Image 1 (cartoon, rainbow, N blue to C red):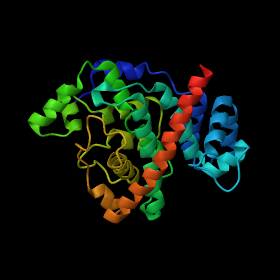
Image 2: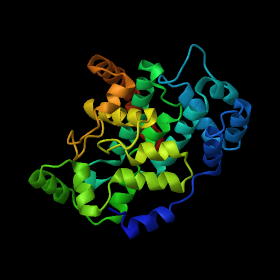
Image 3: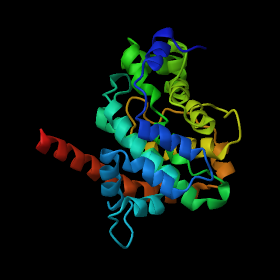
Image 4: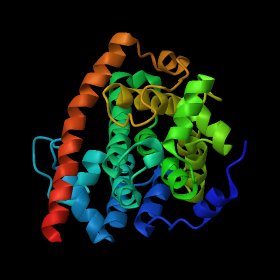
Length: 289
């Protein structure tokens, strides 16, 4: 199993992350970083600052009082969530429709955002599971490999679905047989290219592995969060529910059936807000055109 050369070349020629995002990644890896330093990083990027202040006051994040200062937003959200928001803007700029997966550009973005939210909900439900604060970042980026798969592979969705039917295999297994790799593996290489911490890259690269290669709360959370997003009908596409997961991930997190259903319910509520955020963004873009 190996990633095709044209995809590796595509990864090598990806545009680098914005400097402000690169510096946030470095800050994420420094447990002793001060929030004031994080605020200074963000303040150097006016667009990021405006976007974060807008989002922190949205219904998804809002507290009792309106946030007007960036440093207050940093205190409310923390470094990892700020990185998640900053990356959300960058990933949405990269997004394109993915006919191989029967997903529109909007569906790809929404599935990524909802998976990240599901990671937050799992963390809130099972604080003793030890899920690291950076886990939503891996949730946001878990399917980023799909963007390069559709860009560089000349393949049709029908071919993958036919293999799934004739060989009785999952969509991801069909990817592996047809292309020599799956989108998780490609995404892991992108995370490496962009300098993310190893744990995030592992969460992206192995979220479809069965069994999972290691016992890792971040990886377990991404696996279950992806299932949550699919269960509530976000990002089904051609794959639908035709996926296999390591059920031990949920057990390790201490998330039983009732707990899983509760996470699904809370994530579904948040998904409505995310859909509205997407609609508002489209409306704003149209008005500005």
